[in-house]
Image 1 (cartoon, rainbow, N blue to C red):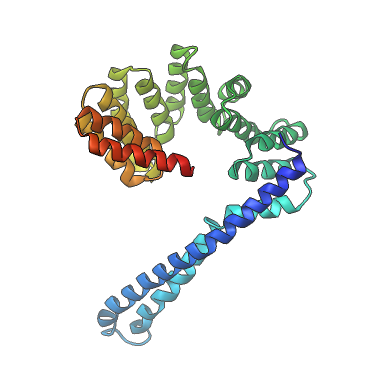
Image 2 (tube, one colour; image 1 turned 90 degrees about the vertical axis):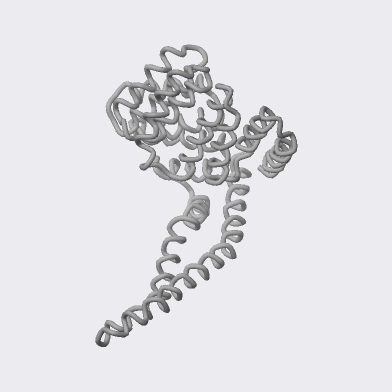
Length: 305
């Protein structure tokens, strides 16, 4: 790992560059939001004109409401993480939460080794903080694939009741998937028993079944996922479609695989693997032109990543 001060300078510069890049994009979205407000205004004016003053003027407020609502939303979402990162990099950490906050910003910007270092420092100062332990395990496993270090943390969190128990059990299942599949299944099942409506837990178990060719169990898991699908987000819907597509391909149903991967791409067109899998499905159908087009798109996205 580089010198820590150099990493922090690089991370701060990256956050500042991200903030600069976001501003014109947010300006476009703001104009779009105001445009929607104007449309609402003009559509509503004839109806509201029938009401007495000042009710008849309410539609005139629509563009202003749209503008300020979107500005508030963007400042709390799109800009928030970059601004918070700049702030934490500008101050010297003194207490555990300072190090944990800085680790979170380093994680967000992709400086995972430095994030691990700060999480460990925070835990030396405050060893009973389950959130920091969870964030450390997530960084070690999800980003650095250091399962040997993440597993003891996941076992500790998964073995006691708390906000992170179910998610820690999912980590255990993912880490144990190759070396002890039966133990992995028990971890996934236990996580879902604790939080049955969590879409991510259901998807993790489904991915395990698909990846290990347990297709009968995967079919049952798809039904379980579908029951909680309404509680998910777009990227989770895309993942679900991806897994359904992979399963269809493994079952010799390439046409269904193309359909499912098409759904995934419509929901999230930034994932190279979606195009790569659909390319295999097109090839299985004998449609080599579409397979080549998807393969090129997958390579293009991989090069840009």
